[in-house]
Length: 252
Image (cartoon, rainbow, N blue to C red):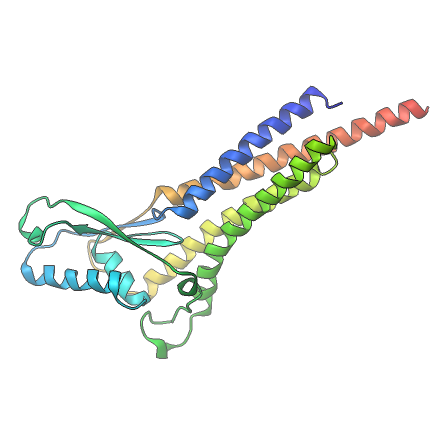
């Protein structure tokens, strides 16, 4: 029989785990991790240049410098699996004071995620930048690892409930702790990678960069997983101590 305190802790831990998993899943699947705000464009020459950037972004070959320049100049947003631009719906949009804009997105393929980064973006002769390459790979692999750990913990917990056994609770708590660390590491890798990209790229003047809500969701999921882990570990240890005390009392 489970004490009411332990049962309450397990229920709260399950709710926290579910919230953290939903937040992390939404963050992984959306593109609002980093957002650029570009100045308005005036003149047909600048407009034709931006149209060229847009065409290369959507239809050209994958190149870090090309899509980075497009993000800088066309109010771009970037996530773990998506990169998007805000593009006008009309041809002569630069003549309008407030043109209507729509979001146009392109996904990163799996092979593109493993493409090496170079010390000078777009220059393959400059040598591979190992730090940026592995930061990029970690930022999309770690959240998948975190979600996998939570799913594994959920399966183990379901089996434990069916068998009416609280012994695996400690292991489930450790899995959630690792998931929380992976979520936190994802955010750190992403921010470090973006900072290094800005250092080796020429960012146009008057371009503002802000963190998006997708990144904050991933950041929030980390402490939620850790709080769930703390409750699970406490319930497992406390229940184990109570069980041994009761057994010793019965033996005596």
